[in-house]
Image 1 (spheres, rainbow, N blue to C red):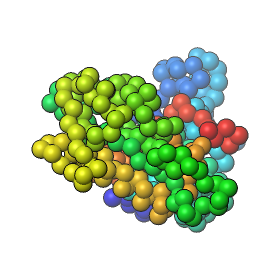
Image 2 (image 1 turned 180 degrees about the vertical axis):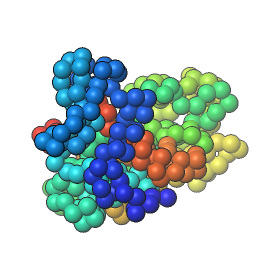
Image 3 (image 1 turned 60 degrees about the vertical axis):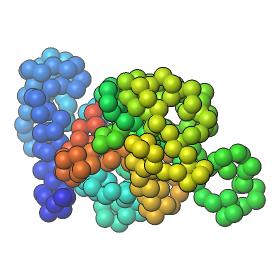
Image 4 (image 1 turned 30 degrees about the vertical axis):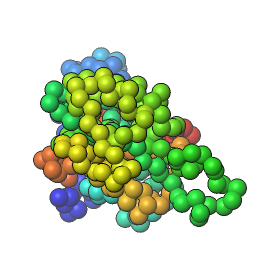
Length: 308
């Protein structure tokens, strides 16, 4: 659970100490030169809180240097609260909600949310999904408003997606999800993603769409169901897990965010993937999930001029 009475959400000093405990868990280091020894606390009333000095490169630093918090005018306690709210809300928190709860402008809340999503963005360096005896489900869905509700000039006759954005996801049963914003749904687009993200010893589970036929031959087994005849389970073959993830994604986008632009969809996917991969069913608490997101702030900078 997320304890909103925690001092890190109301006291900037406590928030800074919390950030230091997460970023410097293995010991304080200089973010300028990487020195792990020879750093000292700068004392004095004229110096800002949390300032340190590196004897190696002769530079001063704080825990925010080299993170999304660098040069931010927003108090760290508000940053900590925003991280916890976005990490503990299953379907997300809108920028308007953050704007009201944090006491910042809507523009500031919107940008904070995108920087937090950047911290949640996976590096995909944990190895492929699945493995011997494990099943990985693959499916695609479409994000966007109904065509009938669009202005005539905004409608499109594109086959399949009807002008909507395509999201392709891979879900390991009982494990993680990896989602991608793709241009279209065909073997040429999806095959490289599946080959790069799924262990070849895995069992690939899909529907009977043509884009999965060839790539399915490259795995230990290819289980298929025919949704065209309303078949949803054939033995151990089904895609209910990935479709369950899509239901969370769509409810969040439709009910919380209402509209997601093409340019930023990848970050919203990172947000929903992160919460799913760090879900309570895997033994991850709200506080642990938020802490992991905060640790992801290191080495990432996102300026307002380049939010893409």
